[in-house]
Length: 138
Picture: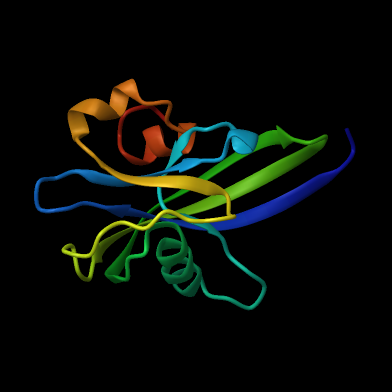
């Protein structure tokens, strides 16, 4: 396995007034795990621009008050390549919590949901999500 690539992505930890976390479920092709909303930073795009775009695509929500919380880095294998993933984790607020969630169509996620914190450990979370939310060690 000689192929290597690097991926930079931005993700948002979003909570509502009840403390629930907004998560998105990936397609079965990607493993069907629950992720924080967000995704890859495009060439020439700032991480904050990518975060706005990805959260809107995956949940239908606009965000504000973006603050960098953590930077996570790991290496994993994907389709015969080693991928070095650098994940920028931000906290942010949803501009209008009264708007209903929208699910992404034709993208990398299939569902968006507000999840109670006591339910988080029972979901198949992506490893970086568990680390970002303080449910696992980094």
